[in-house]
Each structure stands twice: as C-alpha cells, then as structure tokens.
Length: 249
Image (tube, rainbow, N blue to C red; front, top):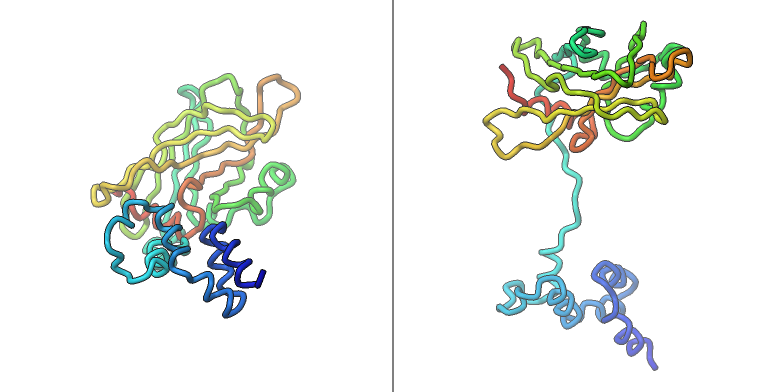
C-alpha cells in the first residue's frame, strides 16, 4: 500500500484535534486531511442537524473551523478600583460575643504575609504559593475558639474615594472545621448592583487558619484570616472587577 492509501484509512478514525494536527506535518498530509468528506463526518458527529441545510461556508472544513473555537484568555481592562482605595471591616463573633474586630487597609490584604512571624509561618506561608488570588491577614496576637461553638463573620468594604460601603459577608457561620488543614470555612453570596441583573450566585469565601491548642481538647488558636473568590476570580484584577460590580451604598 502507498503512503496515501494508508493515510486514507487512518485519517477517518481521528478526532478533530488530531486531524488538524496532521495538517501541519507536510503538504501531502495537509491535502489529505483537508478532504471535505472527513470534515463533513466530524460536523455530522458534533452537530447532526446543521448538515441538513446547505453549507453557507462552502466547505465543511471551513464550517468546522468557524464553529469550533479554542477558548482564549481574555485580557481585562484596568480595574477602576484599586486596593489602595479599599478599606475592610472584619468582625468575628462566637455566639453573640465579639472576639475580633479590625479595620484593615486594602494594601495589607493585597500584599498578604510578606514577613510572617514564627507563630503564623507554618499555618499561613503556604498560601503565598497556592493557586488563585487570596487576601490574607495575620492575626497577631491570635485568639482562641472552640470548634464546638457557633462562630460567624461579617466583612464590609468601604471605598475611600466615594465613601460608599458594600457588604461582602453578612454574619455567615463557619460550618466546617478541617483540623487536618487547620482551616475553618464559611461563605456568603455576593450582593450585586441592580445594573448587573444577570450576575448572581458568586460566593465570597472566608477561612480562619488555626493551630491546635494541645492543652484543651476542641480549642484552637486562630492565627490568620483568608478571603477569596476563587470560584470565579483568580487574579487581583478579577477580584477588583468583582468588587466593582457589587451593590455600593
């Protein structure tokens, strides 16, 4: 059998990406792989109904190429907000007792833990190398909590330029404690401006990072706080655009 005959037997068995890759080998492979019958079969397999009407692109290869688009990374415009503009109000309760209350500048949360203290190093330093953009705050001095108590957190954000405030987390309960990773988790759904009615269902996650208190069973020492939106926003610019969409009052 000739090389062309072998290719004519193999190419019909290939999927779209493999067939397209074969077109880059040489002119002979490209000419055989562009046989419109092969691409009609792929179109029929992927979109059966579209082959019941005349092909407006002339060839099924062009039809497939135009309908099949590889995902492209999108370049975001420069966010209108910056972390220098933002101020975070973080309050943590145990039942109805306020345990932690602090106003934190956006610059501090953005930078994370550049120089963690010995007390916080083991718990928090791994976040610097983890995926996604996480806003981190070292809690020094730390505070102790019982994993059997009801813990909750509220987070408000103020934009200094406009003096408007938005609510990110509304007294959400930490309902999951993972002693293996030393983290307690809670989330709340973001409240978006009425200007974006199709944006919904996006969560803000808050984690307490802790170390076991060996002296008391069920008691842990909180050394850090982490907030992220890794469901949808994985970079600093994406997080800032997400803040921009919120309901500011």
